[in-house]
Image 1 (cartoon, rainbow, N blue to C red):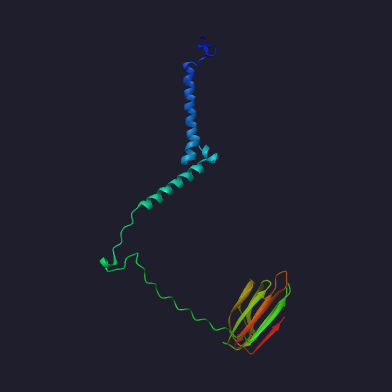
Image 2: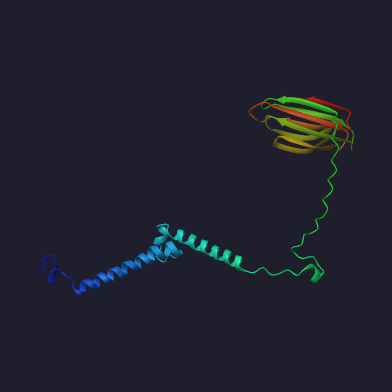
Length: 217
């Protein structure tokens, strides 16, 4: 029976058309391989298109994960060498419990300071004040001061007729402590100034070799 739906000879593709279609398909496959498959699967990007399309990063991550999996598998498969027994070697094996060194003795605690004087005061923004101790040369005074509500600038110094010294200075400090040793007989102590925008409270505690303590503005 005659089938009217069958293509005629004129409608069939020629051999040249078949060759051209085959070449185009092959070229398309190569382009897809180079531009997509290699970057996305293996991190290889000879054209640079994979990097633009963010596929090269994906391929590099896949390769890194595969390498890590292989390393983990190789480690798990490696046999653990047998350790010689303690009886055979006369030495404890690596897996035997090791004797623990004795715990270090606790460090002795420093005795708490018994403060002789405590002087709290408030500094408004821009305000400064000074506290001095009367001390003889070589005498020592222990001190500790702390700022509540902010920070201060300070200058630890000493003065006497014909003598002056600056022991330490600081800017934006919230606390300080130590021992003040008089370089000469005279007045030794601290000057603080509040350079902040709000009031601060300073508390000074002192103890040691001094005969008098006074505050000056």
